Amino acid sequence: MTSAEAVVDDDWEYHRVQLPPGVSRVTASVQLAIQAEFTGWELSNVRLYSDGTRKVWLRRRRRARDLLTAQGVVA
Image (cartoon, rainbow, N blue to C red):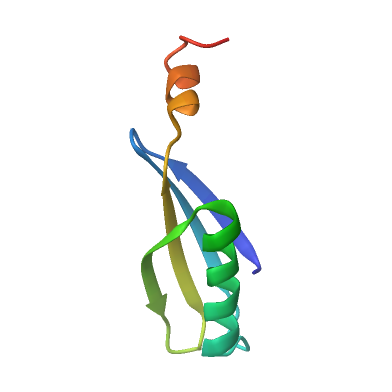
């Protein structure tokens, strides 16, 4: 997985992953399955471009501790 960026919402964290054109469909699905299984991400959106590049958005619910820290309750 090459480039990535993250966005945080009130209830969700989003993680954008860009897969290069040479990555096969099977390889992409295995990489995303590993992300989902070990780090708790789920597939939100996939865009396949004409050059073969895939832009994938993963998401996961924010944990209660992260929400409390963001609100300043837990130091």
